[in-house]
Length: 494
Length: 95
Image: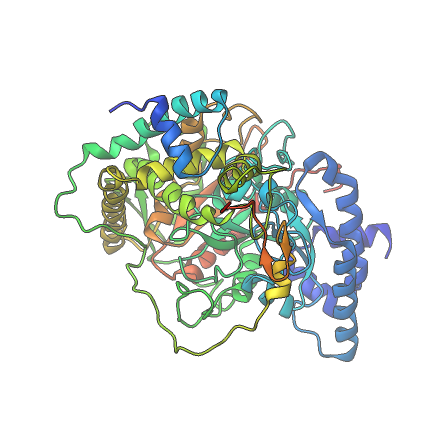
């Protein structure tokens, strides 16, 4: 493969790579090696990958090439990508950004991992993330912060910051991610990517390390809606191993990408265009919305009356679920164990104190408090009631409009270290995204502009199981604009 | 009701987390701030509202009571920090 061909190959997304591989413009082994080389050159500065699986990737690529020669290759066989290090991968360390799992080699594959592997996709490695997905800046990782490829003094967003940085810097064409309160959409906004969090239950959570089980959902970060459609097709579907997986057929996401938008009713929540939103972001979001108007959509103001309470309710429910989920890390069965425990209680307490980072411990304590005797009704039940009100707000809005749009984040990426001292400031980062998880709805962020050279995202929220529609809208927007094609130019070659 | 250091000690014990003195005082201040943010939701009247545990309000799916898992004791024991003869080892619990 010539240098020029390689450079071209590294610019291609999933859909285009499938065509190139089918035409035999290059082999999967050549493509995979090109990515591994590029990771070798740039990962030290970005810290996007925590594990690079060189040998395994090349073996998977060789198998895809062989299948292609034999005429038996699946459409997307041989295309490289990365997994967020929250998905269990057999034989490969799955650390979830935590010292607690630094020595954990998973004995099984997550369902998502299994599905992508069966499609012939080539895993390049595992991406960095906030510890147990608790963070909005990728600064809580045991493996250190990830840097934003658009400007290395800034955060990439979190918790899927490693996946976002890797895709934005062309260290992979696409990556898996997870979203409990905004962890796919906010990094997508900060890194100029398409990121989709599907409806709760659409993608199996089996083998995806749990943070807050009623909110966690897997999705993808890509450089186009078309690529997101391809990968969502691969990942979605019923899984008997996940008791909250939904048994509904997966529509053909590619088939409806081009559907016209005429008559589409778009709701603009007035609370998402209020104080706190950077005026430049608002201007660009409104410009993006006018693109949809040009294509025949109708804009209408809606009200999500209780959206100002979503962060409050979330920071009871998510920590409460986390405190229960993370009780399994006890230094006995797997994961980190402290040195020379004097008794069983010392073993538990020191293993957990040394194995977890500050933010994880903080949330475990908040959750423990909210669930403890005397506070359960005032915090946990109250938060669940507010959750109902938040869901009702969306249901009311969806009687008047088909989708809801607004900014994904109130601003562009912020400097590393600027919000780590004050947890509440960091929590408010997810102000526009968190309610979507509480209601279980699908949400997508699409690149919608640049401010001083930094990307911003437009959030599109739909009714339950409306992924096809969200991808359709994002695709139509990308046909009319070129924000999604802007890249940070890590070495000037893009 | 304001949190006190002894509340933090109690929570840390319930969560089985050992905290240093510095960590306790940091936790007191940050958790106090978090709770005051959370307390904004107390302002709204939720009388008569059914709690929502889950986006879909779904009930637990049941399956037939048949064995689907194979015995993976050896594989799983290999992940343990300390194991011997099919058992997880911990410090002595009984004298």
